[in-house]
Amino acid sequence: MSKKTMRRLLVVGATGQIGSELTLELRKRYGGENVVAAGHRRKPSENLVSTGPFIYLDVTQKDDVEKIVEDYKIDTIYQLATVLSAVGEQNPQLSWNVNMIGLYNILEVAREHNLVRVFWPSSIAAFGPETPRINTPQDTVLIPTTMYGVTKVAGELLCNYYFLRYGLDVRCVRYPGIISSETPPGGGTTDYAVAIFYEAIRKKRYTCFVREDTVLPMMYMPDCIKGAIDIMEADPSQIKHHVGYNVAGVSFSASELAAEIKKYIPEFECEYKPDFRQKIADSWPMSLDDSVAREEWGWKPDHDLASMTKDMIEKLTKRFSESTL
Ligand code: AKB
Image (cartoon, rainbow, N blue to C red; front, top):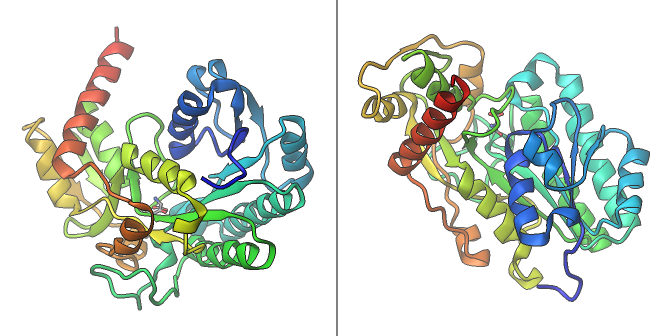
């Protein structure tokens, strides 16, 4: 840990898929009052509101970001507010504004207020069709063809610039698709791998928007949270890349996931009707080489396809049975 330690944390995008679970985990570690949750569009869960401060924030408004940092004496920010790939292709201007202006505001406020550390997730969307798709290296071609991907590459470069120019300790990982049972993602290409569980349990059928042979890198939420916390708690001497670290979880095709779910729900039927998201998926890696993250700060995922599927089915089945009581 550096001489400056993280004490007062702000999670921007706290009502989103990753933010909602990361905030609760951070509150367990650092204390509820010390972790301020900021959300924008989605209504916060009861849990998020009852375990610590919650505030509405539009990350594109720098003055509002600054006010929270000053009011709550924030020293560390997790910036998770983003417009994902599929929605970003429907509204590229919105994607640029939220993703780039939002990140720029966070970095500027962090610089001006001399914050200890910033976390910002890049994504496999930073890669493009010219990138090697199997075991994609850490340092490789970054020419994405989606606006979301463009904002991820530009964001990585911006974070690196703030580190080199201002010494801001900003840390990034390139997340694969994230699979989780608490808060659904919204507007991503990898969302099929979450929706398939909800539909398999509720309707025993799912129409998948990518082809059955589409292989993408994915990660289960507990590994995603672990990655965010481990990289932020690593000693600064361990962090040599201030652009995104590749972090791999598990890679599988859509039909392999459907087959794994069928082991628990034998009557489950999946059909495949690829739409515009297929082209996005085809431009992304199938698997990642995350050896640099493993070597530098000890990254190691815990979940594979089998353990993730079992846990997802158990958690969602329990939740749905409780909500129909
Ligand atoms: C998306 O599908 O847009 C995201 C991502 C891979 O960053 N889940």
